[in-house]
Picture 1 (cartoon, rainbow, N blue to C red):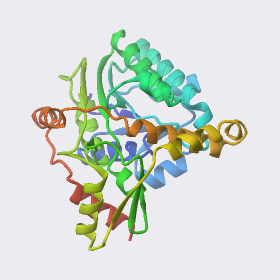
Picture 2 (cartoon, helix red, strand yellow):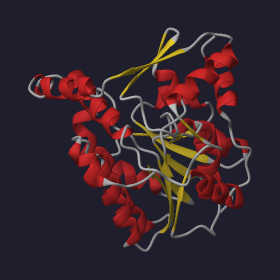
Picture 3 (cartoon, rainbow, N blue to C red):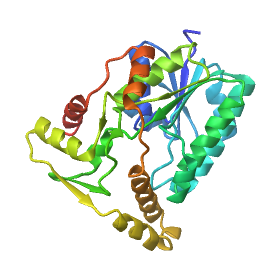
Length: 306
């Protein structure tokens, strides 16, 4: 088993690259399925790559062959693939799980949303809630040894809202939001993939604390020595923009992506109240890692963007 690789789907993505790095640091063999093998190796270093598309069943079967575990960290939420969201994140993933059930591996770690709520996601015209719920339901009814990791927004969201020295947030965001560093996601997912005692469990991932956007802006300012201002934009503006983009988005992938992002912002402002302390305590009791604080993530972000 120790010589069998762990297959990562989405290994070059925001979370996937950190999962690969965490597994490599543990000395575990890794295999990545990528449409661009040269780019994958340039990004990830010395890693086994099977080149091909997740929607190509024979390629998936080839990638699964001889593996000990499968980690699904697939995202099609990008301008170039937004129209294939259901095809990639639902249909192709379900086909992959069926192939794994028939020929192995049995161990599967699936990266999902923090709280699966397809009804609310549908109200703002985001298919992601229904997609994740469908995959989780398939896992629950399968013979696979699965673990679901429910992800909150990445801490990168705070930096994405910055425009110069102003954090601009439509709707202002929820009073407190669980977020997590992609480094922590990588470590937790790597441990989950290499263990056999977490079957049938769902974990809600989070950093050490829930944060509001104004508090995040203040602490980014303190950590970087800048005067970061917080500005709340009325939520009616993204709602109106989403409506106005309805027809143009039919003809432009980029405009469709922007419209979906506006839906995400609306969903973000309706993030449910959750017991972050309890979720974090469960992670600390189950996984062996040092959690990344906001200040640690700020330092990492500053280093990467020098």
